[in-house]
Image (tube, rainbow, N blue to C red; front, side, top):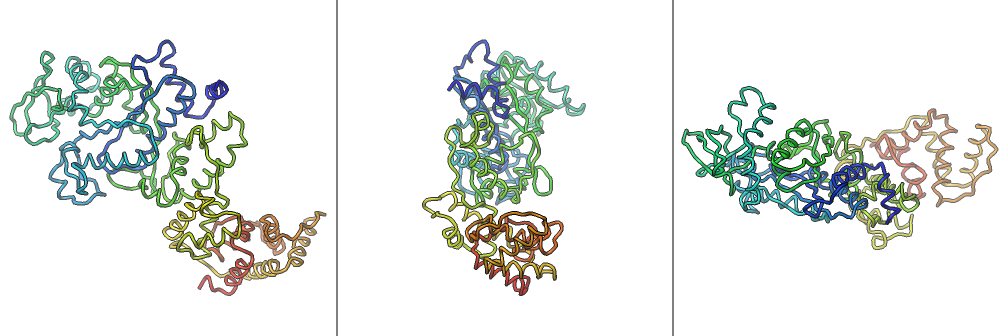
Length: 547
């Protein structure tokens, strides 16, 4: 354990760097609460999306890193701001007219447009929890509605009344002149309509902890700030929540970064040390626009899991959190393959290297072995040439290529299912086959001849070696060897004058696969089968694929 702790304390992996900052808070004394509190926030104005999941996952990675460097117990709270008023009807939910009648009401007072839960807020909270539970996150769920109404927030709300002027000074500096005239940190919930009111205060009474205001019809009301009668504006709410819970760490997107001094100052005014922060870059859709819960652009949680494993999504989240990344369907194959590359590398790495490997931060101390004897990208190409409609078709080839079955290689079996779905939904509609040029036709005919006869293949390799002035011994004829098959393809391209040689491989992909990029072709032949590859080449030469 001491070796692990020493390595973790010097690791440059970003979860460890953040964990060390949190630990520094307790250099002189442990936390009075007995544990270090990590928090993530969720705004349930729309259905949960991958950005929300990313916050919880990344915070969990930092929490695990903290546990590697400290024996102080930890907690993780996922806090839902479900008492926020619904400002607009999300574009990706049914029954818009039904929801429109409830604008400005707390999300937990808005009917569920899906008809499954007691409110829209409860529905979105359930969707978030379902997904977090699927991943096995260790967290406590907090609802703002319950937090306000149960009295858990009362002490801090009373303190906010007593220190109202100090908090208002912080807020007014950040507001435009016209907004300053009507702003209050308190948002009353109208006793009759149930709507969240954005109205100025006529008085804030520190003696009985009440506020007095006129509603939109000019009627005067006086309400206690406790018991769920009032909520805080979102910026004061951040700092007040940290103070009420004693939060040690929270991360958020860079769109919050300019408000960090405000959140921190309000937390301090309310009597607590501000937490450590981590600001991550936002995710972008295929057009380079920020993904949004309400507009539904980008990829949903369920959509990613239709085409790839949960671990591949975790891997995507780990990479460069301070760099804006496109979050679109076309990143999925790369994430699947890179994740398994890291899994395969992990057992042979030093402890320092393992702690920098993303799979350690995904799995902790229980990093599994990869059973992907065929890459995801290769499965997609196999699905293409086999016109696969189900994963059983792929297994007909995989079983001949490797000593593997769906039972012995469940990860590969799941990947085969993902690959078929991904191919049919995203790759197949975009395929564009073409006929070969004269140069390409001659080379492909030569490749067919080489694949049919070992002596012809060796002659092609010898011709290539002679042209390059190499006195290299010829390889053994081994039709099962990816390297031997690749050497044939390479030699044929060289012998037919392709310069650069990548034009030869591009021609194979465009004629045979209908795309400009593809797999290591020797590996493809080994997986698809020599006879099947010959038949595919002959179809390409005959123009049948382009037709």
